[in-house]
Length: 209
Image 1 (spheres, rainbow, N blue to C red):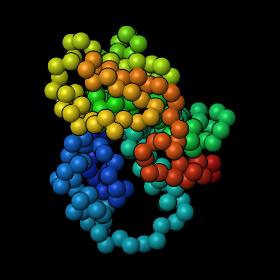
Image 2 (cartoon, rainbow, N blue to C red; image 1 turned 180 degrees about the vertical axis):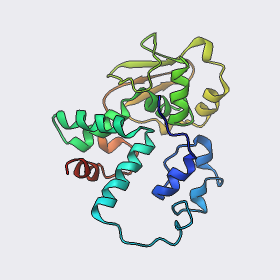
Image 3 (spheres, helix red, strand yellow; image 1 turned 60 degrees about the horizontal axis):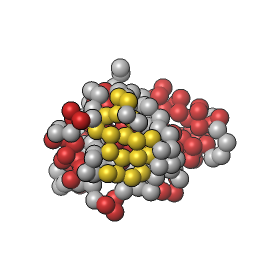
């Protein structure tokens, strides 16, 4: 499976904001954004050219794509599916991305980052409704229950991630049972509830050209 293997912090610097790709590091002063909030490369600090409308749209798409850890073809497929559904295409796109299993594992606090969640899922550490699922892109439905498998409940990476998850941090479309290390995807999220600053309309405009 093709996957980006470069430095994740460079992706954040390219977008000039935290994309939370490195788990705990993103919440410390070791995060490069804290003292190097400019694009990587020898011209990153000096570049001050005005961005065209196309460049603004492209950067917004890249920001969202990188945040969820998707390749271009994967992201494009989600957009095409979102455009076929009734409602606002941009909001439909965000909902598709949020329904992914790897994203939900991360949102529940069962993994420190989406990348870590993807790896844990691929290694069969989670079940959905009692059945092992090792497909990170698996789309959840209302009422689906995600649980850490019994043999995986002692993994330090999961326990360390759960320690950082406080009760008031849980999102309204999810619920977490810390004692049993399981969560529930209650319903499809509303765009206004998703804690992600992005202008998805720019992505719609980009792909509609």
